[in-house]
Figure 1 (cartoon, rainbow, N blue to C red):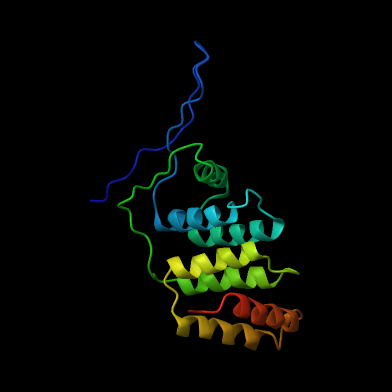
Figure 2: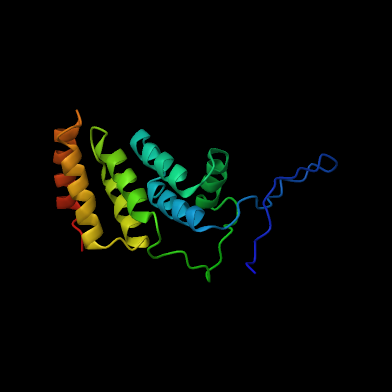
Length: 171
């Protein structure tokens, strides 16, 4: 039987005006763990651009993180509330659907005008924590290149992909 951490709810006492006491509402899951890991990378410079937010939105959908939970995730990353995860939790490694999730995030990054260093860092971190293999990355590249012939943004996407692979080679 899996142990589930207690939920986090904010409770306010109006009687004595004590500060809000946080209680967890987020349930630990692999999707939440991966989302928080990428969110940490996005917030390293304390700024999340629209392009980074787009990638985070795609990842939240892929990982099953509800839009209503993203603010709480931000509070966890900012160390305002405790994380629902412990040091013993192990959610790294490759699972079914990871390749598709990575491909979706990569395409979201390639479709904007410029891939920033922060976006590169987010994608690189994602491929490392999910254990993406070089051959899987190669298949994603081939799929993106094949789509370029039928997609209006295809040529520009390929140029950005080549630049991404130069800056963040698979190793």
